[in-house]
Image (tube, helix red, strand yellow):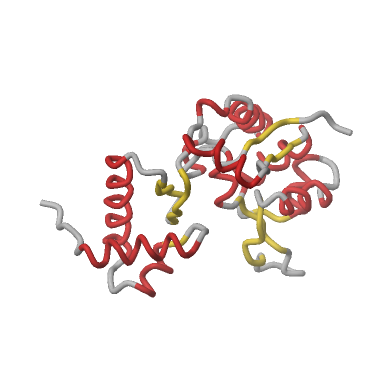
Length: 203
């Protein structure tokens, strides 16, 4: 029998996610609520279920071990009209290739990405970081302490994923690139998307 979480803690979690505006890890939640991570995850899933049954304008999204409150896709259009803007990510083939390598090799260094691609990738990686798809993940314990890179929650959200584990296992980088391109070109099949992704030719 599944133990039901107290209503007060459920409402506290709801307020916490609403106030954050970003994804919050179970570890961060545990610092605020007197519950272990397993219980907090169950609590978040219960709250998501309540939103779905009520057909609320809000929803809870799950990314790895993090949760985030967001608006339901059905209402993106009126919201975009209100703010007169729509976040749109444009990815070139080169950026998509580098992103695919980072997805499957993370955490990975800039040099490792460049070695796999066979060409310097600093500018490409810098653009991916600027777009919020990639972020720093500490430093490697090696001479020079190179910075490690990993994908972000925004990457998962843009491609309609909860975890990178949902992607095919151990494909070649070009196969990952093709998979990401396929997802990007079919946004209607990814209702969890909050941001539009498009591909453009190399300039």
